[in-house]
Image (tube, rainbow, N blue to C red; front, side, top):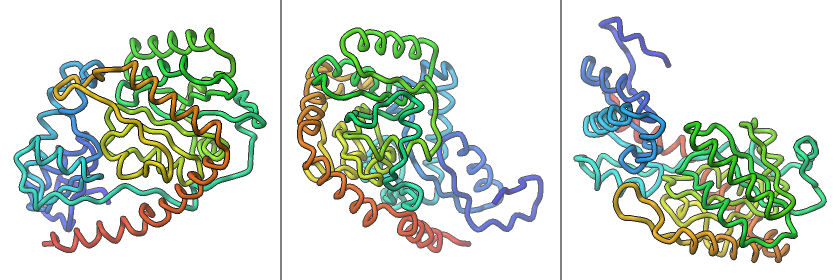
Length: 324
């Protein structure tokens, strides 16, 4: 519900903020009106130094807003256990105020579908297997490592890159150059340079032989839930909350990566990660039975662990402990 701060009579029980963009309003509500403040942490600014490319001096402001809000909040929801540990390490907060409640998805909206209309529209051959990447063009999503891995991949499958919304013009140029280089190396690369809607995304997930998530920082990785709900097996980097979503050897493969322990958290061996990523993708592409097994197990895991109804119950229970 929208709250009007230009009044002395605010009857809200809780103010719940998501991401630093909204935190300042939450801080004002708590400070001026005594309304309990809940913050859900989907990412942490100190762990995303590449955002300075996009925000310039605004990055320092985002760091300050996030720190101020988290240290004032009555309760903090971390979207993964890994995120909870990061919050407690980076900020002056009582661990008892930090609660792990995973993200979820709508299982009715995200499910395997038969339609191939979108595939044909984008020039994807539905008769041939394809590797799928879906994500924003940002350093966080690891697109450059995926592009580096392509040279090590077998050539008997398509590669579909549903990637748009670059953080900066420079990153957009990097992506364009990388795609052009990859297309010169092998056939079957399709770049969907636009943000697609949920229906099209479901179609892409549903027919993907393998979904890949090469992120270098991912507090949760809801994109993997979407793919798993549509019965796509996942190959993902073993980082952050992804490790609480994808079960290695059961719903897909997790690929370890070694990073610098301090900012800018770059990979210490990017070529090794690229090769290891390609090895797991090639392995799954050669094994249709394993792909189907992982896909079914992925859907089952999402149904059992990540439905919105279960997450809503946990969130409501937390609210009840904070009501004035």
